Image 1 (cartoon, helix red, strand yellow):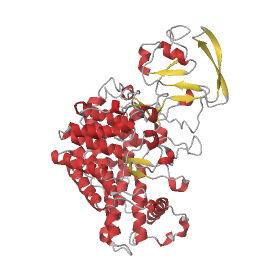
Image 2: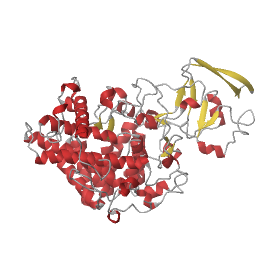
Image 3: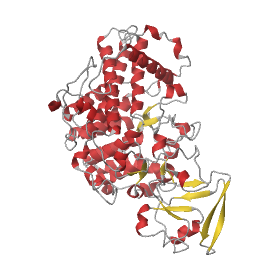
Image 4: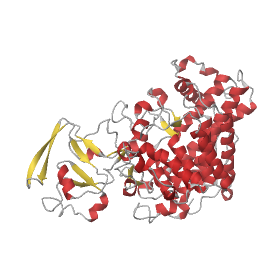
Length: 585
């Protein structure tokens, strides 16, 4: 539903839903038949879910709903940054660019609407499974479908309760127009999420046939439980359950870490041994909707800095929404950790056949015309701070230093021919920065196509190890915690550096775990929740040395997002459904 005030689904909307469900069913089962072979004129609100085919389409439709949060632009703002890891890029939404978030912010309203629309659809499917006589549906499949629907519903509530606090809570399909509502305590909703995921873990299959790849498994539910128990951590019992759930996934023998991030995120290798649960996309446009757009948001405006570097599919379409902070870049030890090289693009080559630039040559101390050829290195962002001689050695390649160095280097007086720094000295900025390339999609038909087709990983095994390590540390077992964390770090090591990447029990701390999660999972929609869960959100968000735009504006009440204004104005009982503290109506 698009708000709490929802009308019962009309015939027209049921038909659209049926079409969408059938489309996803084709995607999941690799069916080659055309949609028009199904007699849609026979579908009515009364019989949509009373057959095996209808309820199967309903389940598949719930998986399609996950595309509303994996991965449009708003979810990266809400789950990743601006934060300690990410600064706003030049193309970021104004509310996040300047950190002026209020009840009218569209990106916040978008999550609210898509979540409750999906919850309502899940309620309808679950209601049918529990109360409707469904033709040809045996008890085993019925129970599995219930587990899948309850897993997905729980996942949407998992987002809602962390973003908005005490939410509107319902397990009943909306009928008619609702103009009254109340807010349910978050603790009650968290217990509901746990109960749903426990049911899912007990009733979902351990695996599926290839034709049903992408459906939630027992191990996806257990991973989700580990995360939720760590989030609520009401007592040590929750921590023990979190570790036990993670251990079941790790010890199942069904999953293994890929050799490197390069292998993990290789576009031709989406369905690999590390992935626990993902949202599927398709190269068939009519099955792909808006597609996976995650490839857009971490790509800088590389084509605006050098005349020989133009937009190409290999480098992506530059939306410039989020850029890595210098704090984040410094978390990687590039000498021993391969993840910086695997996950970030820091070098761009000439993409045109040839071009020229006029530059002052520091080697001859004279101005000259530089000829550039296709494939030649044109721009470079060093991982660490480098000196004048290092920049000079790379001439004529444009070298982009941290933007903070503008305080030390005046381009008008300190760069040749007027100063000591070579003429190829440049500065990182909201338009040019290191690009996260985990989500790059070079298989799009052209550079301007936004609809990506790669699957989006929601849960993967490296995260399971880190959740287990966090639980073990909080339970007072740093030796076990180090063991879990070292599994992830050894995989990330450069050749011959596995030993150097190992940590000791004495090095384990919440801060170290947060840093390791940043190195391993940065950009994957976890950072906001990680900071909330570990109690570090205020500390990181108010540090002016990390994010100088957000730090002076961030207040404690901003741990929660505002309830969307158009939602509040629909309520006829506003006293029972108040705005979150700190935000105006």
